[in-house]
Length: 409
Image (cartoon, rainbow, N blue to C red; front, side):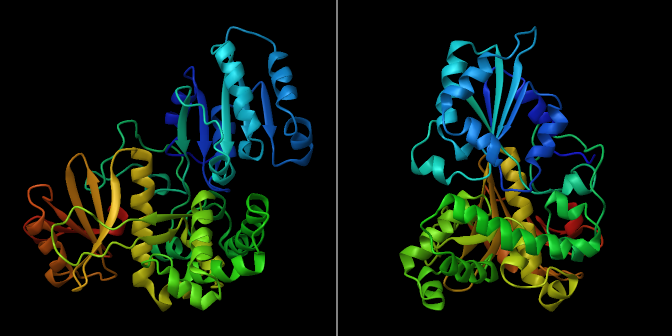
């Protein structure tokens, strides 16, 4: 079994006397992580399974009765509920049981969507729960460890992955993405798996989470939103292309975020410069899923047709995932109406780290000119900038500006 960056952290945290909430998109490896950390739970319920949903999802009373019927022992009984968002009443039942005896059970509630929970104001057990988010693979899970030269601070709990996923080159990563099941599959099967994910899972999840949504309309939106992944969001333009209203397009973007298959990247707000853009960018959570959703072939030829924007998205996804695990810091982008642009800005502990992404393997100062402007205008918080590219080794382009090869990110 392949190792995950978050395994030891989750094992430690889920052993504490709290309810563990584990969220993430489908196929990010939540069930595999749970089997590795808790291979023999006292009770495992999957509400995506029709039989379990019929038995436990129609009444919280039955769930409480089964939990109370579990044999008491020296160790708490581990109770895992997968796709818990399908039965929000489960959260109230867990609170009742937890408040009754916090040491008798260790509840782990998993979900692949937050939409229903957010819409009805579900009880997410404040003061009783620890929140966990599992992402597609990060660099440390494909190549052991996090390189010391990485511009991203590493979580204090991080340690080398003992059984990393199969090595892959940059083109493969840009073509197939980072879902564990896709990365570990034979190369000839990866494209079919991604097309299936886009065609079946997303449609199924949308139907389950938002039964009133017109699937034909959503499919048109999904393809265009995937094609424009990484770009500044223009609701009006996308509405014209799809024949939908701007409000509907905004709702569909929110649905993707609630399903954990996309996220909004805000504009950097800490600049005194005039004419700074404020519209967000939107990213699909995985490049392979992005290609399949856009109707593009998830294969190297798609990457080679226009590799620069895909490398930029890949870097953005890596930064987003790593900062998500760090749970300390934020990610944004910087762009002005006059054309000054920095692809990504990390804010961490009162420090700013600007990052540019270039496809080149021979970077020079022209690739970093906007970094220099940003550093000059945001002293003393911004001390060093980076160009992430395909150079074979780190390079100093100017004082306080370094080029790093993508594999050192």
